[in-house]
Image (cartoon, rainbow over all chains, first blue to last red; front, side, top):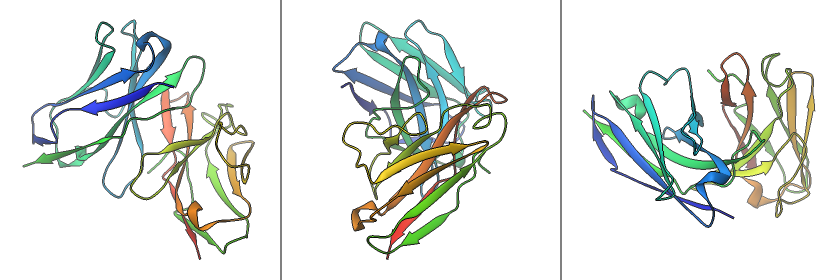
Length: 118
Length: 111
């Protein structure tokens, strides 16, 4: 089964851009859709969006104006950028895989906490 | 406010059966799009527990079962065990939002 690992800064200043990368191992990045999900401290899960290896994307309408996802097939990595962040964007960010022709997420990365400071 | 509605909390004694509901609408569960359930043990990563309404991934105990009817879905846990204490989330696709949605989560307490 594929394994995923998020990486990136744990602290981002308000109004700046949050950037995270997810590295895929144990499988090809061409085999799944790749998703970002976040969870504010003590709160529930929020789907941010997904990207396919071809570059096609689908973003949560509530975040669409601030989100950009990209994929690097040569490195088996995909990335998330969220601009103009505020304290409300403080959360644990998870990357996850979505098998073809399914609507569920499995497996997930370990998650990384990103804190937005003022 | 989540598109899918779950009770904030449920509880039960060891050995009992509890159910967690997930209520949606005609643009998601009622469309019908499949419902999936995730278990998040304290301090850990959410893990797929039920997929495609009723299916268990390899390794998921058969004490967990899912069902769906009209615009709602349910997760049942029979023979409750202390290690079942966790947060549970339902998830589906919403055609109006053209994206994936989660329920707000339900905290299960084993008394």
